[in-house]
Picture 1 (cartoon, rainbow, N blue to C red):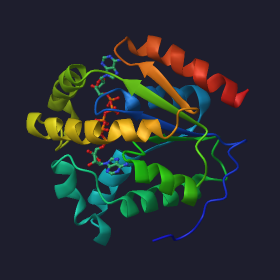
Picture 2: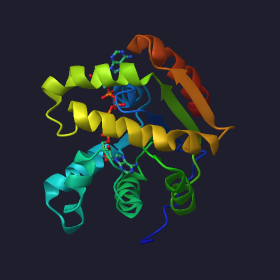
Picture 3: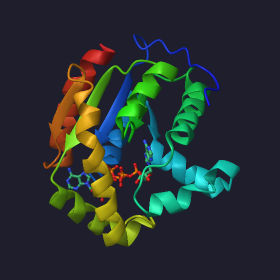
Picture 4: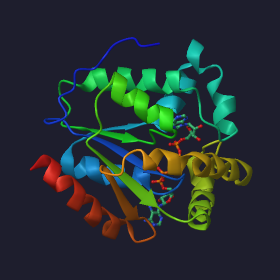
Length: 198
Ligand code: AP5
């Protein structure tokens, strides 16, 4: 359902898609980006978990899908994103869209309905590293999808879609080796974002 269009001037408010497999460090790096640049961080995973907690009508099917490590219907994700972006469009300095798009059609729908993406940061790490990190986090995260079985499914969903997503944006894509210490990765992130806010 196309409920509205968001008039975002991306020359003043950059839109950055933050992509990478489950556990690649998207959230970790977004926290650092927010602290330095003051961008608005919208994680589709967080938006979906908040929706589940709210007990809304559209949330009813979400829990089972997320526990299977599959993608929820794009219409729901896109509506949640649009609502969140519009609510913050006035005061925001720029948007970090964390965990979206996860399939080719999501990227197309975003740019048609919201605004063109400014730059795409992709955190690259092996499946072994991703699995180890998520299993390490499982004890404290309280997330229903941080268990061995669901992690395998999340990785499969990611690997099935990722190449097609990235291939759509050769000019805007910036790949970062995410198998390094957090601060080293963030130094590279800054080299991408500094020119956007100069
Ligand atoms: P979501 O919540 O987005 O989960 P995810 O993509 O699986 O990623 P995570 O949030 O688990 O990891 P992260 O990359 O942010 O890593 P983090 O910084 O936490 O999505 C959950 C579900 O929602 C999906 O499965 C799907 O069902 C649904 N969904 C979401 N978006 C959707 C969409 N667009 N369309 C449809 N459905 C959607 O780090 C992980 C761990 O590693 C932490 O313990 C951290 O401390 C550690 N770590 C981070 N960086 C490093 C480093 N450099 N070195 C060592 N350890 C590190």
